[in-house]
Length: 153
Image (cartoon, rainbow, N blue to C red):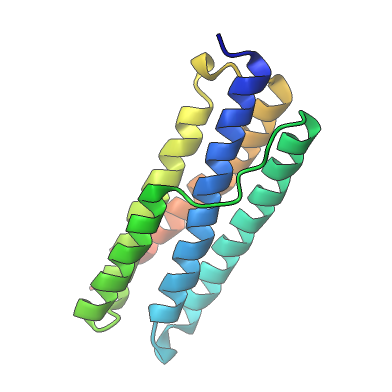
């Protein structure tokens, strides 16, 4: 049977991986934008920066409980980034298509944070508070991407 510390460690490392996916996804999406999309590039850079901060905080929490730190990405995230690459190739770096793919990624991280905060995860209280704080920023990012996507014609 897993201890509370082991459960927290698993959840923290899962969130580190998906934040790494988010960093890579927004970095790649930013490269797929054209010169006329400076506004989106700034948004994507901010969201990648937010996730770098999340990774630092989550990594510190893993260290505090003496766990082994995950440094990679999820298999799903790697596939998602590949899909952004394919989509950009076929759409000619179309802004709405890129935003749609980014929203899919934001849906995934939003779900990961929601799942992390379920009662049966048995998180340590300090980890629940950290994750809840990060979740607010993730939810705001999702809403921003959705609004930008919806504004495209």
